[in-house]
Image (tube, rainbow, N blue to C red):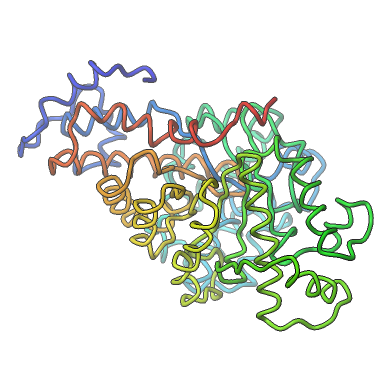
Length: 474
């Protein structure tokens, strides 16, 4: 355990079990802690909180821009990224969705990202909408980031300029490691690169591992990507399968996992079709002939299953987006509702592949618990969900631990583009983990003596077992 021994934990917590009284907080509980956790200052809570705070997370899902790109943007005033101020960095990802859904005009929101709008002017644009959604997980994440990175309690007219100055000034080489290790207590993070097609090879480091995105290989196949892999234009299904082979030969031992977010544009049912049936479909696809929906589905399903065979060969876990959509005014709920039931045939078809269901399939998290309990090759990742709905995430973690093996849950993925926001997200996740474990212990579903090992497991132990970080570095 990390700085907190099992004996010390049990000593601090033992007085709390079964007690209905609310004793005075221990000497280690600060005023700041009391303000954030006013309802619970028992010895049990204090001990669990310290244990969770001191245990590093393995962050299993982020979308960070490259650090070098962030630094270059500030140094050279490169406007390919949003402005390096509170609007461009802290309100550009996820927070934007709540602001826009609360009624903020799109034209005003775009000004928050602009380089030529002063911070105070940006604050005046956002203030009415910030007030409307300040209680959501996204905006709570923002304030936790401000507290822990910039020693500021809230965003307002008198702080927007100092926050913006601090963001620009801290964007120097090495700041990712400082933000993640020192401010967020994150051991390392898995990067899913939104800016590259397959794999961002130059991003690997002691702090970052990289996912291999298979979407361009299969759902649907991107002929330009396949051509680059083959060094010639593909004309047959054999060419497409060979391009997939090349991709895994090139990146399979460097990747931490496979990632697909195809749930944003298609169902997660992947029919298994033979080479004989699909080969003519691919020939027509290359010739730009029209295919029916069923034919597209058959072609994509065949290549997806071939990628799953490669995942088994290279022992790469497969991360799948399930559940809630990023953005706003775009989510087809009926398709989301069927994500996990659609997947069941694929789970059965590839028993040697570890499937990681992202975002707990929110708001259908009960189905995610059921699959993790039923299928030996299914794991669930709480990435993003602590800020989608913190209260639902606490309930989910409690119910998961009561139903499924504790080895099958990953409890944190920051999921942000700006590295700074991972700090606030990690803080909210730690608060949620603490609350869930304390409630289960008080309700006598967990024993205090089991908590240290359980915290270690769900915060980083499971990720260490499932993902081979040392292989990617080698």
